Length: 263
Ligand SMILES: Nc1ncnc2c1ncn2[C@@H]1O[C@H](COP(=O)(O)OP(=O)(O)OP(=O)(O)O)[C@@H](O)[C@H]1O
Image 1 (cartoon, rainbow, N blue to C red):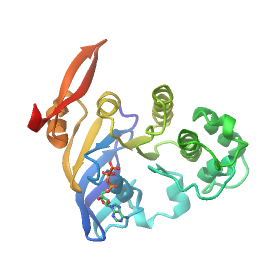
Image 2: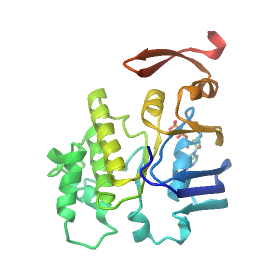
Image 3: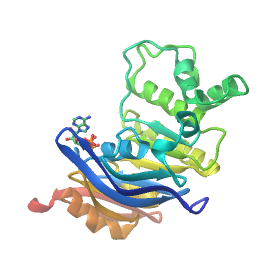
Image 4: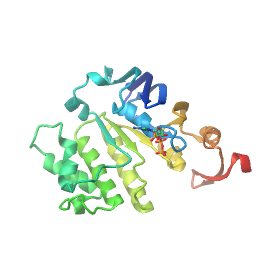
Protein backbone atom coordinates (compact mmCIF):
# COMPACT_ATOMS: atom_id res chain seq x y z
CA UNK A 1 0.00 0.00 0.00
CA UNK A 2 2.92 2.33 0.66
CA UNK A 3 4.25 4.23 -2.35
CA UNK A 4 7.81 4.48 -1.03
CA UNK A 5 9.91 2.82 1.59
CA UNK A 6 12.12 4.09 4.38
CA UNK A 7 11.58 6.05 7.55
CA UNK A 8 10.23 9.55 6.89
CA UNK A 9 9.59 10.62 10.47
CA UNK A 10 11.11 9.41 13.72
CA UNK A 11 10.02 10.29 17.24
CA UNK A 12 12.56 9.16 19.80
CA UNK A 13 11.37 9.63 23.39
CA UNK A 14 9.81 12.94 22.29
CA UNK A 15 8.09 14.67 25.17
CA UNK A 16 6.43 18.08 25.56
CA UNK A 17 5.17 19.97 28.58
CA UNK A 18 2.27 22.37 28.26
CA UNK A 19 1.69 24.09 31.57
CA UNK A 20 1.55 21.27 34.08
CA UNK A 21 0.53 18.70 31.43
CA UNK A 22 3.14 16.32 30.06
CA UNK A 23 2.63 14.56 26.71
CA UNK A 24 4.70 11.51 25.86
CA UNK A 25 7.34 10.28 25.73
CA UNK A 26 6.48 9.15 22.20
CA UNK A 27 8.74 6.80 20.25
CA UNK A 28 7.72 5.54 16.84
CA UNK A 29 8.76 5.62 13.19
CA UNK A 30 6.55 6.63 10.29
CA UNK A 31 7.37 5.08 6.94
CA UNK A 32 7.20 7.12 3.75
CA UNK A 33 3.78 6.75 2.16
CA UNK A 34 2.06 5.38 5.28
CA UNK A 35 -1.46 6.44 6.21
CA UNK A 36 -1.86 6.73 9.94
CA UNK A 37 -4.95 7.61 11.97
CA UNK A 38 -4.48 9.01 15.48
CA UNK A 39 -7.43 8.14 17.69
CA UNK A 40 -8.29 8.53 21.35
CA UNK A 41 -10.87 9.95 23.74
CA UNK A 42 -11.58 13.70 23.82
CA UNK A 43 -8.78 15.57 25.52
CA UNK A 44 -6.42 12.57 25.29
CA UNK A 45 -3.73 14.58 23.51
CA UNK A 46 -4.25 13.74 19.81
CA UNK A 47 -3.96 17.32 18.56
CA UNK A 48 -1.03 17.86 20.90
CA UNK A 49 0.76 14.84 19.39
CA UNK A 50 0.13 16.31 15.93
CA UNK A 51 1.67 19.59 17.12
CA UNK A 52 4.69 17.68 18.43
CA UNK A 53 5.06 16.04 15.00
CA UNK A 54 4.70 19.36 13.14
CA UNK A 55 7.27 20.99 15.41
CA UNK A 56 4.70 23.54 16.68
CA UNK A 57 5.31 22.27 20.22
CA UNK A 58 9.04 22.18 20.92
CA UNK A 59 10.12 18.98 22.60
CA UNK A 60 11.27 19.30 26.20
CA UNK A 61 13.09 15.97 25.89
CA UNK A 62 13.83 13.50 23.13
CA UNK A 63 14.22 13.98 19.38
CA UNK A 64 12.10 14.45 16.32
CA UNK A 65 13.54 13.95 12.85
CA UNK A 66 12.14 14.29 9.37
CA UNK A 67 13.93 12.65 6.46
CA UNK A 68 16.80 11.87 8.83
CA UNK A 69 17.30 15.53 9.85
CA UNK A 70 16.36 17.03 13.23
CA UNK A 71 13.21 19.07 12.56
CA UNK A 72 14.61 22.12 14.36
CA UNK A 73 17.58 22.17 11.96
CA UNK A 74 15.35 22.53 8.87
CA UNK A 75 14.85 26.02 7.52
CA UNK A 76 11.18 27.11 7.35
CA UNK A 77 11.22 27.38 3.53
CA UNK A 78 12.67 23.86 3.21
CA UNK A 79 10.21 22.52 5.77
CA UNK A 80 7.27 24.08 3.93
CA UNK A 81 8.13 22.04 0.83
CA UNK A 82 7.80 18.81 2.79
CA UNK A 83 5.35 19.36 5.62
CA UNK A 84 1.81 20.74 5.44
CA UNK A 85 -0.60 21.05 8.36
CA UNK A 86 -4.37 21.33 8.36
CA UNK A 87 -5.26 22.28 11.94
CA UNK A 88 -8.53 21.60 13.76
CA UNK A 89 -9.59 25.25 13.72
CA UNK A 90 -8.51 28.39 11.91
CA UNK A 91 -8.21 31.99 12.98
CA UNK A 92 -10.83 33.89 11.02
CA UNK A 93 -10.58 37.23 12.77
CA UNK A 94 -9.68 39.30 9.72
CA UNK A 95 -11.31 39.20 6.31
CA UNK A 96 -8.63 37.85 3.99
CA UNK A 97 -9.05 37.18 0.27
CA UNK A 98 -9.60 33.45 -0.21
CA UNK A 99 -7.07 33.42 -3.04
CA UNK A 100 -4.47 34.84 -0.65
CA UNK A 101 -5.23 32.24 2.04
CA UNK A 102 -4.77 29.41 -0.49
CA UNK A 103 -1.68 31.20 -1.81
CA UNK A 104 -0.14 31.10 1.69
CA UNK A 105 0.56 27.47 0.88
CA UNK A 106 3.00 28.71 -1.79
CA UNK A 107 4.93 31.09 0.52
CA UNK A 108 8.06 28.96 0.61
CA UNK A 109 8.29 28.94 -3.20
CA UNK A 110 9.87 31.34 -5.63
CA UNK A 111 7.19 33.89 -6.60
CA UNK A 112 5.55 33.64 -10.00
CA UNK A 113 5.93 30.46 -12.02
CA UNK A 114 2.79 28.42 -12.12
CA UNK A 115 1.63 29.30 -8.60
CA UNK A 116 -1.53 31.01 -9.81
CA UNK A 117 -2.50 27.93 -11.76
CA UNK A 118 -1.72 25.68 -8.77
CA UNK A 119 -3.86 27.87 -6.50
CA UNK A 120 -6.76 27.52 -8.94
CA UNK A 121 -6.29 23.77 -9.36
CA UNK A 122 -6.03 23.31 -5.59
CA UNK A 123 -9.24 25.29 -5.09
CA UNK A 124 -10.98 23.11 -7.67
CA UNK A 125 -9.77 19.89 -6.02
CA UNK A 126 -11.02 21.12 -2.63
CA UNK A 127 -14.37 22.19 -4.13
CA UNK A 128 -13.56 25.80 -3.23
CA UNK A 129 -13.17 27.29 -6.71
CA UNK A 130 -16.43 29.23 -6.41
CA UNK A 131 -15.02 30.94 -3.29
CA UNK A 132 -11.87 32.29 -4.95
CA UNK A 133 -13.24 35.82 -5.37
CA UNK A 134 -14.61 36.10 -1.85
CA UNK A 135 -12.93 36.96 1.41
CA UNK A 136 -12.97 34.74 4.47
CA UNK A 137 -15.51 37.06 6.13
CA UNK A 138 -18.85 35.34 6.30
CA UNK A 139 -17.66 31.94 5.05
CA UNK A 140 -19.43 29.02 6.68
CA UNK A 141 -17.40 26.48 8.67
CA UNK A 142 -17.53 24.01 5.78
CA UNK A 143 -16.50 26.67 3.23
CA UNK A 144 -13.56 27.76 5.38
CA UNK A 145 -12.53 24.10 5.82
CA UNK A 146 -12.43 23.73 2.00
CA UNK A 147 -10.33 26.88 1.61
CA UNK A 148 -7.77 25.56 4.08
CA UNK A 149 -7.80 22.14 2.44
CA UNK A 150 -7.01 23.94 -0.82
CA UNK A 151 -4.16 25.73 0.97
CA UNK A 152 -2.46 22.44 1.93
CA UNK A 153 -3.09 21.02 -1.56
CA UNK A 154 -1.35 24.10 -2.99
CA UNK A 155 1.55 23.65 -0.60
CA UNK A 156 2.26 20.01 -1.55
CA UNK A 157 0.95 20.16 -5.14
CA UNK A 158 4.25 20.00 -7.00
CA UNK A 159 6.38 17.91 -4.63
CA UNK A 160 6.45 14.20 -3.85
CA UNK A 161 7.18 12.28 -0.68
CA UNK A 162 5.85 15.01 1.65
CA UNK A 163 4.04 14.73 4.94
CA UNK A 164 0.47 15.94 5.39
CA UNK A 165 -0.88 16.33 8.93
CA UNK A 166 -4.62 16.84 9.26
CA UNK A 167 -6.67 17.32 12.41
CA UNK A 168 -10.30 16.20 12.11
CA UNK A 169 -10.52 17.45 8.51
CA UNK A 170 -14.13 16.42 7.84
CA UNK A 171 -16.02 17.61 10.91
CA UNK A 172 -17.48 20.79 9.36
CA UNK A 173 -18.69 19.00 6.21
CA UNK A 174 -21.96 17.31 5.33
CA UNK A 175 -21.69 13.51 4.77
CA UNK A 176 -21.62 13.70 0.94
CA UNK A 177 -18.98 16.40 0.84
CA UNK A 178 -16.98 14.68 3.60
CA UNK A 179 -16.85 11.47 1.54
CA UNK A 180 -15.97 13.27 -1.67
CA UNK A 181 -13.25 15.43 -0.10
CA UNK A 182 -11.75 12.51 1.80
CA UNK A 183 -11.49 10.62 -1.51
CA UNK A 184 -9.81 13.63 -3.11
CA UNK A 185 -7.42 14.04 -0.17
CA UNK A 186 -6.66 10.35 -0.37
CA UNK A 187 -5.90 10.34 -4.11
CA UNK A 188 -3.91 13.57 -3.79
CA UNK A 189 -1.58 11.97 -1.22
CA UNK A 190 -1.33 8.61 -3.02
CA UNK A 191 -0.55 10.16 -6.41
CA UNK A 192 2.36 12.12 -4.97
CA UNK A 193 3.57 9.49 -2.51
CA UNK A 194 2.80 11.77 0.45
CA UNK A 195 2.48 10.35 3.94
CA UNK A 196 -0.83 11.11 5.65
CA UNK A 197 -1.32 11.39 9.40
CA UNK A 198 -4.85 12.28 10.48
CA UNK A 199 -6.43 12.90 13.86
CA UNK A 200 -9.87 11.36 13.62
CA UNK A 201 -12.92 10.65 15.73
CA UNK A 202 -14.40 8.45 13.02
CA UNK A 203 -13.29 4.91 13.94
CA UNK A 204 -15.01 3.47 10.84
CA UNK A 205 -13.02 5.75 8.52
CA UNK A 206 -9.80 4.92 10.37
CA UNK A 207 -10.36 1.18 9.97
CA UNK A 208 -11.46 1.45 6.36
CA UNK A 209 -8.98 3.92 4.89
CA UNK A 210 -5.80 3.89 6.99
CA UNK A 211 -2.87 1.45 7.32
CA UNK A 212 -2.07 1.97 10.95
CA UNK A 213 -3.61 3.31 14.15
CA UNK A 214 -1.80 5.30 16.81
CA UNK A 215 -3.97 5.31 19.90
CA UNK A 216 -3.59 7.92 22.62
CA UNK A 217 -4.87 8.00 26.16
CA UNK A 218 -4.05 10.55 28.88
CA UNK A 219 -1.20 12.06 26.88
CA UNK A 220 0.52 8.70 26.39
CA UNK A 221 0.84 6.18 23.59
CA UNK A 222 -1.79 3.53 24.40
CA UNK A 223 -1.24 1.32 21.33
CA UNK A 224 0.33 1.39 17.88
CA UNK A 225 -1.17 -1.28 15.67
CA UNK A 226 -2.18 -2.12 12.11
CA UNK A 227 -5.61 -0.88 11.12
CA UNK A 228 -7.51 -4.16 10.97
CA UNK A 229 -10.31 -6.08 12.60
CA UNK A 230 -7.80 -7.18 15.27
CA UNK A 231 -7.65 -3.58 16.48
CA UNK A 232 -11.32 -3.56 17.48
CA UNK A 233 -10.86 -5.07 20.99
CA UNK A 234 -8.10 -2.53 21.64
CA UNK A 235 -10.38 0.28 20.45
CA UNK A 236 -13.15 -1.03 22.72
CA UNK A 237 -10.84 -0.86 25.73
CA UNK A 238 -9.57 2.59 24.73
CA UNK A 239 -13.02 4.12 24.33
CA UNK A 240 -14.73 1.90 26.94
CA UNK A 241 -17.45 0.94 24.48
CA UNK A 242 -18.59 -2.20 22.71
CA UNK A 243 -18.58 -2.18 18.91
CA UNK A 244 -21.19 -4.21 17.06
CA UNK A 245 -19.76 -5.54 13.78
CA UNK A 246 -21.59 -5.95 10.47
CA UNK A 247 -20.17 -7.22 7.20
CA UNK A 248 -21.64 -6.01 3.91
CA UNK A 249 -20.18 -5.78 0.40
CA UNK A 250 -16.83 -7.08 1.68
CA UNK A 251 -16.65 -4.18 4.10
CA UNK A 252 -16.67 -4.24 7.88
CA UNK A 253 -19.02 -1.77 9.54
CA UNK A 254 -18.83 -1.05 13.23
CA UNK A 255 -21.25 0.71 15.49
CA UNK A 256 -20.68 1.70 19.12
CA UNK A 257 -23.44 0.09 21.16
CA UNK A 258 -22.97 0.33 24.89
CA UNK A 259 -20.34 1.50 27.30
CA UNK A 260 -18.47 -1.49 28.67
CA UNK A 261 -19.85 -0.87 32.12
CA UNK A 262 -23.47 -0.97 30.88
CA UNK A 263 -23.62 -3.83 28.39
N1 LIG B 1 -1.81 25.18 24.65
C1 LIG B 1 -2.43 24.55 25.67
N2 LIG B 1 -2.58 25.15 26.87
C2 LIG B 1 -3.19 24.52 27.90
N3 LIG B 1 -3.71 23.27 27.83
C3 LIG B 1 -3.59 22.64 26.66
C4 LIG B 1 -2.96 23.23 25.50
N4 LIG B 1 -3.00 22.34 24.48
C5 LIG B 1 -3.64 21.27 24.97
N5 LIG B 1 -3.99 21.43 26.26
C6 LIG B 1 -4.71 20.46 27.11
O1 LIG B 1 -4.15 19.18 26.85
C7 LIG B 1 -5.18 18.20 26.78
C8 LIG B 1 -5.14 17.51 25.43
O2 LIG B 1 -5.56 18.41 24.43
P1 LIG B 1 -5.66 17.99 22.91
O3 LIG B 1 -6.28 19.13 22.17
O4 LIG B 1 -4.35 17.52 22.46
O5 LIG B 1 -6.67 16.75 23.00
P2 LIG B 1 -7.44 15.96 21.86
O6 LIG B 1 -7.24 14.52 22.14
O7 LIG B 1 -7.03 16.44 20.51
O8 LIG B 1 -8.93 16.38 22.19
P3 LIG B 1 -10.27 16.50 21.29
O9 LIG B 1 -10.56 15.13 20.74
O10 LIG B 1 -11.29 16.93 22.29
O11 LIG B 1 -10.00 17.53 20.21
C9 LIG B 1 -6.49 18.91 27.05
O12 LIG B 1 -6.82 18.74 28.40
C10 LIG B 1 -6.17 20.35 26.72
O13 LIG B 1 -6.97 21.22 27.48
